[in-house]
Image 1: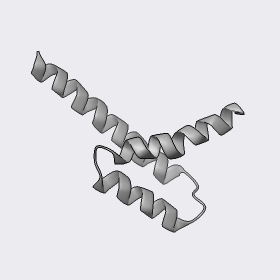
Image 2: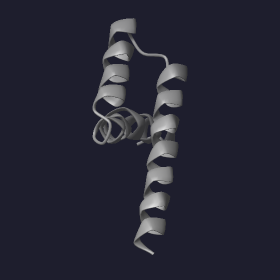
Image 3: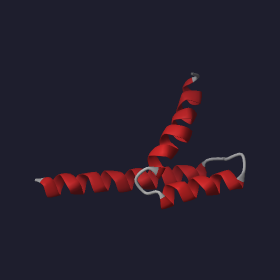
Length: 68
């Protein structure tokens, strides 16, 4: 049972990581340097990087689209 839970969490994390990388590639950053900085954060800080990107960049984008 614990192995199944671990597998589900790993799959969820990989999907989330790929989603953040995909979003980063398709997003228009102000500068290329900023995009590269976020890329290195997401790739080289595996557990925290995608979460940081989501809460700092993606959440702000969602809030702007909703008009908040």
